[in-house]
Image (tube, rainbow, N blue to C red):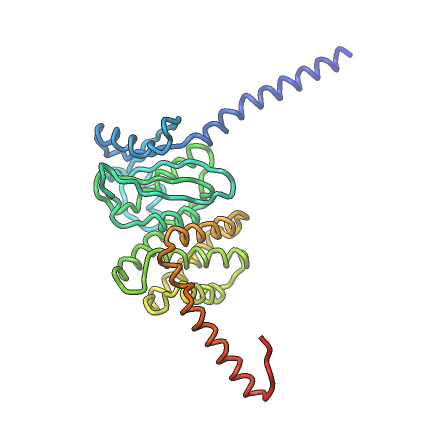
Length: 317
């Protein structure tokens, strides 16, 4: 009996020790992390903190400093040429959200000005999805004008800090994705019938379709998906063959990075597509007009008429 009580006591102490050990880790994971560029002056740091933490309404947060070494570690493998002495100004905050909420990104003005000059919120969303991030609010800002391509380095570092380091191959693909999509948007800027939302929705839709087919999806199947998404998003008249090939190659890289192995990838991609469409209803509602529906119905009628004449019979639709 004495041995049994001793054993039971030991087991209870072990359980208590496990609870005591794991609780802080969960708390850290749930606490928003603010990443501050090392090049910020003291005044800029205070301004950046004020900007990024405003959505918390006085809630707790933790901070980490992003240095040139972080840029080298997370961004250079994708082809960038940062050094350990590179300046870092763009900053971010990541806040975990409930399961199934998806990835939300907001670029915040610094002193009334948007200093992220190139990367869009939708491009950040797609890149975060590719990197392996899910169910999170991400806020980005900069004290000085900057393209913003390095802003997610701090987010990658934040995940590593909490013991959830992201797959570097996916991070590489995410950075390539931002560069590719921002480049295509810059090339088509102010072109009639084009918007960054359409492009990012096409890419998010392609990811969703790829995830349905799984890791073994072929290059040819990916190309078919891209062609379909370009048509669905009414980009056929603006995206040229070179840009289309860039998108195909990017999605092949995403497949090869192992991103599709994540069971949560498809849900997050579908959620992202819905968010993009809801955020640009003025654009996507145009695709669902009575005129477009009539055009599609007329096309279907012509197809039915053709085959009816071809086979001399009646086709029911």
